Structures are given as structure tokens and as C-alpha cells.
Image (tube, rainbow, N blue to C red; front, top):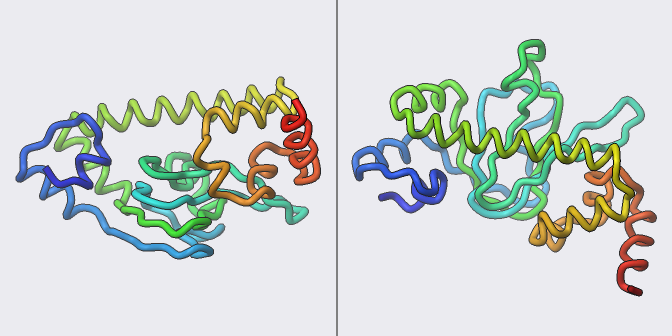
Length: 193
């Protein structure tokens, strides 16, 4: 089986012919730090699988402040889900930026939907991935509503130990909804205990 297809679809089994067919539905994209997959206002019709590197999805509010929605590292999917799956927006509301040199695989949502029909096991696999992502997003909302900044940071480090080493402090602070000064204070407090 093609190694990329095996990586992307984890435990889903395909024949050699199926694997080759699936691989040819993907477009490989190499990104440098600072490259954008998407900018606010652009049309979005694709989903992206991260093979290597690290990306971030964020939006900018009316005051010009960035709010990070998602980090994506190896084996994660990323897109502008509000636009892709929502019914009101037709243009991207967020940016997707490469923050560590990356290789991603792109597939159109329309083509992916066709593959889900053609290969129901892909559809089942993707439903499981989306369920996990939905639970993760909901958990993040609850944490932001109920936990202290220190507890949110500790949960972030425990949940995403590899991301913390790959991103800048202000990215982590934005993701947690705190200032970089608060993040520094929290880290100092933790190091003293």
C-alpha cells in the first residue's frame, strides 16, 4: 500500500490499485515558513492533510487582534471549516499559515465526498476524525470558559507536547486567549514549583 495513503488513513485497508487511485487524488504541496494556504476572503473548497511541519489557522478581529483557532501538525487535517461546512459563508473567514516548513496533501471537498461514497470505509474513517475534532473544539470552549489561564496552559502542554516546541510564544498565548506576558508569568510560576 502507498505509504502516504497508509499514513493518512491509518488502519483502513486498501488494495494496491485502490491505494494508487487514492494517491492520485491528492496534490502534494511543500510550504515554507510564512507561506499561506488560505487567506480571509478567498474561496475555499479543499481540505488539507499535514504530512510534516506545523500550520496555524487564525482569524483577525475588528481591532486587528489575531485569534488562533487551530494548530495542525503531522497527521492532522486543517481547513476553514466554517466556510467549508457552513451554509452561510462562501468566502474564508480565517487564514491558514505555515509556521514550520511543511508538506501537506490537498484534496477538494467535492472529490473527498466522492471518495467517501465510492469507499464507505473512508467516510467512516472521516466521521471518526471529525467526531474527535468536534469533541476537541468543544472541550477547548469549555476550558476557556471554566479554567484559569495556568490550567489551560498545562492542559495545552499535556495535550500537544510537540506543538509547544514548534511555535512562538505569542501563538500559544493567542491560542489560550491570554497575553504573552501572562504566558511568561505562568511558565515562570510553573518552573519554580
